[in-house]
Figure 1 (cartoon, rainbow, N blue to C red):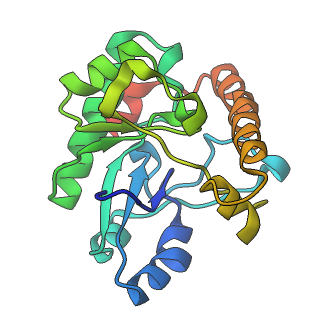
Figure 2 (cartoon, one colour):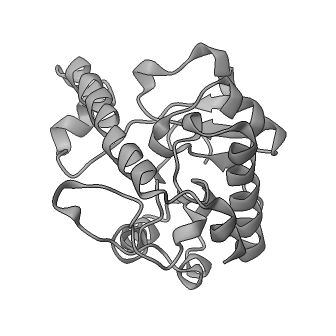
Length: 210
């Protein structure tokens, strides 16, 4: 992830390999893929979405073929880091970083906090764990406390089109509306956070031992 513009993919779905990566290859363009290491090769049972659709995550074998991609951390279990104790934040960040580096053979430099949520504690621990930057969402709501350590991003979703994409980049008349839409989508992600907590899918040690 270098320069002023970067293409990133959160969650590490298989579709990055089957749909997006071939296009990027044709353009000789790189990207950064944020992996949830506890779900590599599995289904997205961590997520609550409209229609309860299931998607498969990348396998390690697929990541080995994606030579133009850089891989980074989206934690182990995709829990909201601002809702868990510091020691569990540290485990999410260190364990995911280590396993990616072991499997890929390259340094993991970036962290994407699940749901784009972070606070001063998350930033401090990320620095201590050796991350170079934290990549988050909704650039209109980026905290100044992170300084250059926090990289803002614009989310692109299935409901977007060419015009809304331009607006996200500040080129359209509805740029302010797009910022509001990003905040609304991010707010609605609280549903996944709540359901994950109710399901008690937070046995981090079990994920790491696997």
